[in-house]
Length: 489
Image (cartoon, rainbow, N blue to C red; front, side):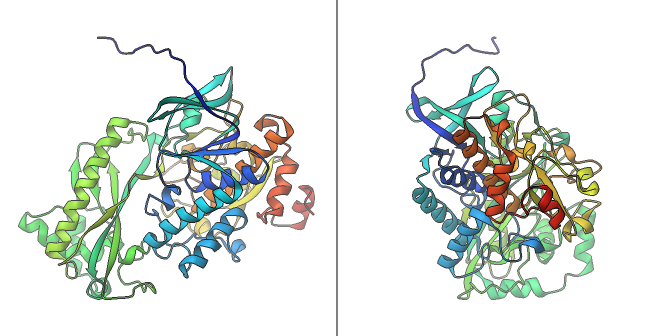
């Protein structure tokens, strides 16, 4: 039986634009706005019908704040800061305090900003191959209800999260160290007696239940400890296993069920949005793989993971309804429409920031702004990293693929995982959400400069890009001397 088929057909051109941004998650949104403000005719496309990615249809995976470093005590700079302030003016509370309120607000504000800045959108389309002329990306094919269509662009920005355009262009990618990726699906449960559930969260968990957790190999962390007595009871009755074993690994809500979906702070947290006795709680399905060879680029695996995760979420809600006080009249409120992910495929850039760069304080001639070491609890550098005691320079080459022109990458797509060493969770230096925002503005601004100056992205005037980001109040240096060296003093 043949293993491949040949295909040749004429494909209509749907758009010809200056800048094409593929992916309307948080980095893609910022990149598109930055490119449009720079004077480039910009089109942003996405596989969903709603903008926002992780913060939009993904239900906001992660912590209940942007976890900004002290240098950003006044808030995140640039376009991201504008969006967040507009969100807060509409919701009346700090950004990311309430997942369901904030996710819908963020998507709406992003759409408003696209319209104000005249960013065109094309939604509910799937990326096909990159359109190549030699080693230069000239656009992409997309699959639509009308069939295959072509979009041509002077510069393409990969904001897909998995470096999909980079991969399709033939540029080097890394599937992650040992193909590491951590997928997860967010969900919410409605009509929960919040006061009763908070009492459970306040109660001290007896040692016998912690020992049972250890004896059974349950991977749930301390956020799920309040549920341990009920997990054990359901297990002994044969009603529900909190951890599902599958051939690829284990499924469980390893972070428990968050009170009012306010991050991973557990059910004892105070939530100013709690307006009545009954409310919504949420959580995350965690996937723990047995082998380190699984990849987010495997379509059959991803289908199996999604099916199993949705089945698990429904069974989990039934377990809570039967066993957990406060859930007696609850129902499954919603599930995220796609997997959030850490790790996974990313671009091998012309220079990937390493932990050695952080430790040495490496300086780069093509630096475009400074980042701050991200949140990695399993990292040997945890104390240093989490305290934000140092910043690091991010070179423009971090956003450029090897061996390919006409293409830039932002967000997770440019966050090469190969810097990880002695622990599978070490690295991912640019994984923080606020850094995803900032890479988007850097790349979108660079794309506009490339178009306006008539040069490929790899030949963008770094001083011009750096000045634009400095004007947007991006953090550039720890000293006046370095600012002077960068031509910014």
